[in-house]
Length: 280
Image (cartoon, rainbow, N blue to C red):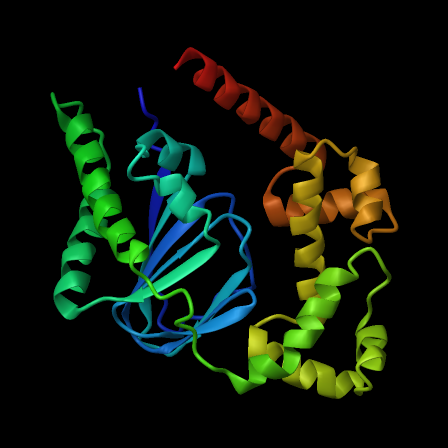
């Protein structure tokens, strides 16, 4: 029995801008349905307009900044469900692991996909015979169409953004020195910039505050280390937290769970996957 581990969301804000850069445990398929703007998928930036379709995997930091008319439809889907629905010839899970993919749809394709988003958003609650199978068929149709688009996508179709080019070396430096004491002053000093100029170019280019970016990168790295079996306190120290309690609070704030529970849940999921493979 396949569990339908997915959620559909719609942005309906009059003025839309994600509150903060964030990441998800699930893969995400997002389609812009109106408005214009920019979409930051670390470490690149893409244009936003109707018909832009994105696929990005778990743990990709992202943030959109767009105008008042911006609307989008989003599907969050568990990697385990993609794995369950994959076949030897159509490996959805492997495609979703390609970090990030973007394609531009025609108007006809956009309208067709909007209808499928709407159908997926209808809850399966009546209990009528065959309703659950119809829901699965709709999901398979949606995934078949979107992943066929992604399979032929140009992975280099990113927008040249000169602001982002300015901070690209800074992003790389931060990711390479997470275990060190990183402050706005120390980062600015390394690049012979004033801290005011650093902040001035960093946030417009990425949507992140400098320290906000550092913290998110540390938590993403911590999740990777925890999945590899590292102890909680050692993990916090390795990614640059000098206080274990601060690490635990920050991890829980950004992921919704504690480091210890995260590691246990990942271990349990991994064991279940292995069990399923052995019994298959």
